[in-house]
Length: 340
Image (cartoon, rainbow, N blue to C red; front, top):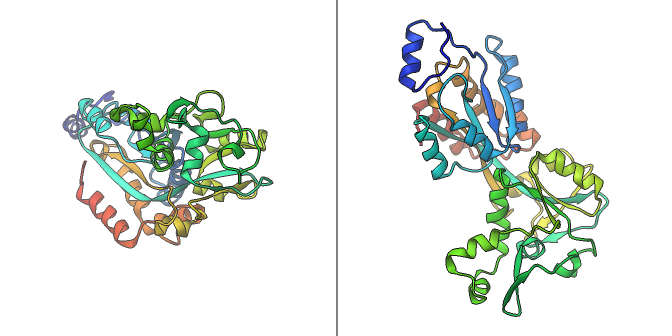
């Protein structure tokens, strides 16, 4: 007997109790391109450590896309875990519940920083959020009026920058990195009072701050960071947005910019000194625990200090480990079955 779709945790339990065969015996994970390499390291190590379980399948696609897929429902044809470089939004959680995914376990496993980088042979960039806003915003306030962004070269934005044509490769809107980019960079560099004085309605100020120009100067990258790196390789005067870990693993090809006078590093992100950093998450479908073989063990293994502690392979790759107390709390919350 094959159970094709499970409508709820109760149905899963009932089917298991009746001896129904589970059609899928391999954990399925999708989501954030930032979390992807970390999850792959854990999945591969898990497969080697626990030979009785198949190595989990980990795919990318972006935080938003992964959460959307995760929230499609409960059952052996639905994924078990969504990786995300941002926290799940209230409307996404509501979408989950509407589709029957009523018990979602949120797991924060560490931190990452977002960096700006150019080709290794390029000049040094000392960036402030206002510089990025002036270079990439769709509209700017000039002489008290809201106008289309007139800047075409970086040195028009900041005379300390090179006279390069503005070309920025930024995360696409489906990536969790995009939301952090908007809130930590564009929003921080935006003069909200000037927008209101120029006639922008108060309710539209944030949207205007986050709106990016569409004239080719800012290019959305919907793939992962390897695509951004390829763009920089093809355009030596381009500026790309990357995760800290990706940059550190490609530091022979890229030159990183400071932001707010701070060099991005594991230490500056962990201390909170570097301004463009964020926690990393994955979301577990509680109804699948005990049904999909190895799911509980995989999460416990992921959260172990062996994987996410200061001397772990994830830390070696670039993860900024959470403080000891946070790691302990994450393990305790998962064991207790705490849901959102």
